[in-house]
Image 1: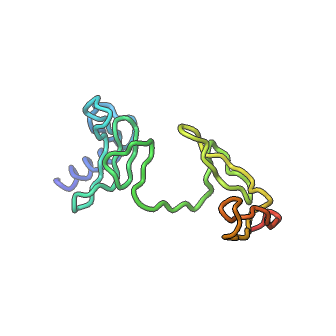
Image 2: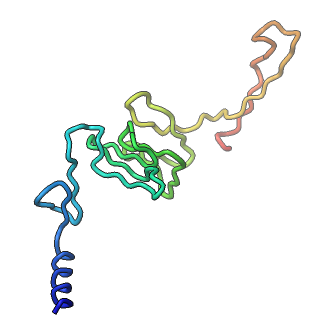
Length: 144
């Protein structure tokens, strides 16, 4: 008899959504933070040593390897990216590089200039540009 009750309960649990901090969850796992403090954590996952693996704050900031992310996503450690990087949805084109758009702006793609290498001659006896001539530029044709 116990086995049948357990099976019935287990089947009921598997078919339901689970809520933490709310009575009517709308997803398989639905978590609602217990405070309006933006820096409090709605979700926190730690290692057995107590160091943080993942934290999601009430303000929506997500930290990987940090307990106090200050940006929408903050990673402490290396990031492995197997796909393309798409700032503002733009993957750029072959040969382009990313450069900063400034504070609160997404980075932008740009083509490299045709003159990539700069070779100069230093002459300590020269008085112009602290001995640098500034006259010898090699055109690499935009290729690395």
